Amino acid sequence: MTALVEHPGATWLETTLDRVAVRRVMNQLSRVDQICLWLFYYGDWTIRDIANELGQTENAIKLRLLRARRRFRKLWEEGES
Image (cartoon, rainbow, N blue to C red; front, side, top):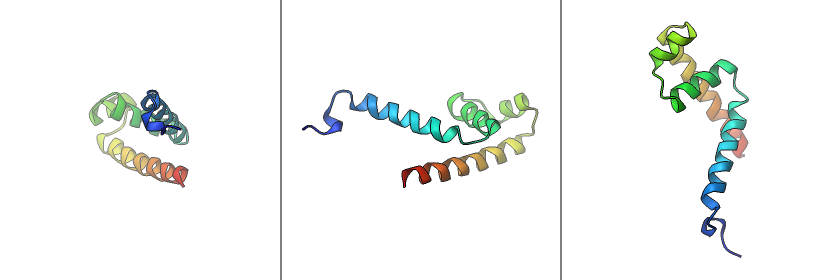
C-alpha cells in the first residue's frame, strides 16, 4: 500500500480537507468575525477598508481581528485534539 503523500491526488485531497477544516472552524465564529477575517486574509482588504465598509473605527477592526484570530486558533486546536 502506498502512502497517501505518494498518491497523485494527495495534494488535492489534503488541500480539500484543509479547506473543509477551515470552513468548519470559521462557521463557529460570529458572522462579523467571519467577514473581517475573510476580507482581511482572503480578500486582501486593508483594515481601513474593512472599517469603512462596516462603519467602525480602524481600532475596532484591529481588536476584532485580534480576538477573532484567538478564537479561531482555540477552536482549531480543540479540533485537532
